[in-house]
Image (cartoon, rainbow, N blue to C red):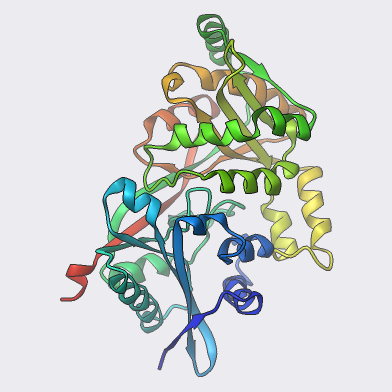
Length: 381
């Protein structure tokens, strides 16, 4: 028999919720654990400013007193208001390969959603787009990344068995770092600079980049991503938190800002050395020695770079601004010894983004999916 228990957002119970996920994948060579402290803050209503416009409850499944699954039930009211939909989300979902367990977890979210007046459930999604999202359905033999979900192949079978169908897919690409900046990029970059009066801005001071473009960078992300699937606009409180939490981790050589003649930001590219192996070695913890592995991941030799985000102001999209970004970033990749670059998830229909990888011998190596279930239909299943 499966028992579902609501998890209170205390540190002790949230740690149990988080560690179930890590323990389930203990022996999987492709799984990359989250940084536990990050997950604890994301799940804590007192710490995560997304709770200004979201609500959530967390549940764990037990059998004979042993944890066998977990799930979060979330409503992003901001997205619902902008889309006109009444949708709940499920996220942070993990379970053993047992359909009774997965069914009980999903049924709990569906009941919760009905009580809240929702008409459908979608997922796996989290609070916002800068959180992890999507069920992996291809690429189970590929190393995961710090910014994405890894799950066992049976997850998608379980979702479909319980009446969930495809809503949207993301694809990911593994690319080769070229030996030199492609001539095409150099040519386009020069044209774009002259035509639009754009230039590259680089920083060596975190304090100065924060002062000059910290908030503007995230406002650019809001503008660039506003039409993407289930996008949740970042609030000022979220922006302040991201600046405080993550700016200090970035290698500023791998942050490229494009500005116009008035010094207004029109594009940004942010990359980061892959932290996958470091997080595996640390098991997502700073202590006792996790900090050492994480520091080596940031500062040590690494052959892979993660392309965390590329954002271009809507009126400059598809006009060659991306060439300016890569003319600056590729020499940095070469200098730092990166041989491969990995994209973040991109909507399968987003041809504008995918076209920018053409010069880098891209190989689609992963695919992930969000699922939907309409609750009116669910009552008759």
